[in-house]
Length: 294
Image (tube, rainbow, N blue to C red; front, side):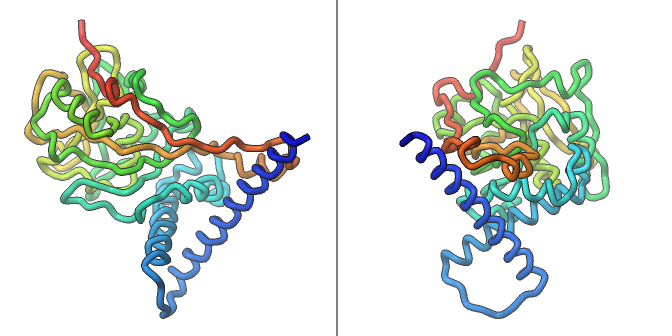
């Protein structure tokens, strides 16, 4: 009996948290459309920035048609993603393009939207992205076994770094440096999600490899610029490039599943008591270790 009570309490607490954040997010959206003069404390300003930044990211994905590609209405898509805002520690706003850093970015990682459909939606300064992974295909690059990715269809990439400090390094050098900083290499889906939001994150001579995805040989996927257009290609793991660093993150939030908002509405309080989410952790000794080729 005590367990059932705890489950109900946990469910209602979760439901209340999601409801409160949704109300807050819509308030931010309204204030953005109808600005008024008012004073805010530093904490209120920071929180408002976090929610506003997340709403802007969701709107950007809707503008790109991501909601339609995975079979959701704009409103259902928005409702599914808004709960991620409780995990934003910074502002989730525009990144620092020069430093190549960002507090948080939404990652779409679902079979409903294969990487082959994601990368083709990337455009930079009017130029569409190109894919040059031959003889491999985008879906051949899978997350490495050492990564502990959140189980779900969308999550936040936290503490993103493009890898300016690892320009001209090779994976065998960059991997231990990333791990020693308590960071994790990012995957192809994560890197592509970054460019869906901020195409200008790719800068001349400041592009990035994605050590979190490999295809079983010495190829490392990367995003760089070719004739000013975004290019998804690969490089041999032993070859340094002055214009390529190794993108990494500090962590990943718990994930959400699209459609869960609708499912929760139909559930009875004691039938679906959600467990408390835990952040992904990394094995610092193994995270991002390069795979050896034949």
